[in-house]
Image (cartoon, rainbow, N blue to C red):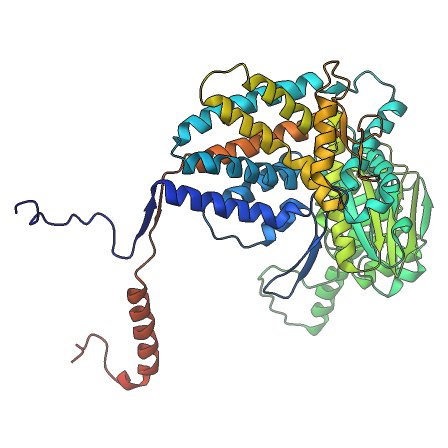
Length: 562
């Protein structure tokens, strides 16, 4: 009787949703699998694209895993982890974003039957971490270094890596053309880590082949005044002056009050304002610069003044472009026109203004420090150019990584099959349950070659059987064999130059395993929404207050309400 009368203990707010135990873990796994299914079809050279239409009416066509994950407004708390690993893969390596989501989804899918059978998640986590460590060691062992090669050879190898990345994108048809362009751009910026030193400018019109690389800086012609057309549009070895100063005639900004007793004195104040601007312009001309760029406006008076003296000027140049011109030409951005010495001026071999499509571009080429490059992209539709820019960003990141950590592995699912074989073999040497868990981890890795086949319309079972057979050869000669997308069979990925930097695979496996372990380790989900009824009441009272506002007019401050 006493037990029945025990009061109920209320810990959490009313309306709190708690779910725990096996059921909610399985529900979290199902949510992550659903997210992985969204990007599943975008993997590989024959991957499909997704068209995403957001609430503002913007349309994005993409098959970049990270872009799709960002645009999907995922609200499920566990599934958000997959969005985060896709973003981290994108910022760390640049490519492999679809791979990382697929792997994490597949690891969880393989763990699900064990969870349902009552295996403790910690046992799974321990085995997955062991398998992850073994897989990464194996990748390092299989990786081939491209160090110590001549520059030309290295360029060729890097272009192969870039082409592998680009083959799965919309611009895959022109991958050789863009791959060499990307390699030249990355080598041009040298050891500079700042990605914004490679500018990508988009000009609608023309076709992809009209895109070109400028070894220097190119930016769209800025807004200009009347005298602009009289300025010369081409210089050889000009001195370049970079300013952060406004060259415009306008009243001085000081809040000064001037009292005049004689109207003729007013003229002297106007003259002083004109003298200030002429003084600034004189100093710019005396510096010997032939090209003057400023982040702020260059007015009509200044434009005409420079045109009369055969000097090119452009105002309102964006901060990013100005920084890149400074890095390329060796100039320094000045905040004043006083004391301009030769050391702060930049120079380049050729400056010209050129028509690209229906835009005019100012192009600085043959820059002395050469630590910058600009890719001008052409194409039909805006969405197409946007996707091309995202694809090039991935390729640029990959080439940078391959330059820094210069080891590559075979792509096309070859490395995944080899690690899978190695882990299965290793699992046989282990006693106990963990043998099954490591086996399931090995099976999950096969999702990459399987999905490559499915997306290309091949018989995945048939191709995987051939791959397993090839990889299990005792001599180890089958290690570089992966899916041949062109014929639907298997082929030596190394010989076919389907390469990817080992850092992509290492990062992907690491991040996917971490995400899977994180989701498996959650045993209770607590949602603490505000009570809906309370929200409704608050909204109703706010509306009523607004409607009755007129009724309280005329009551003095401090009077009590009746």
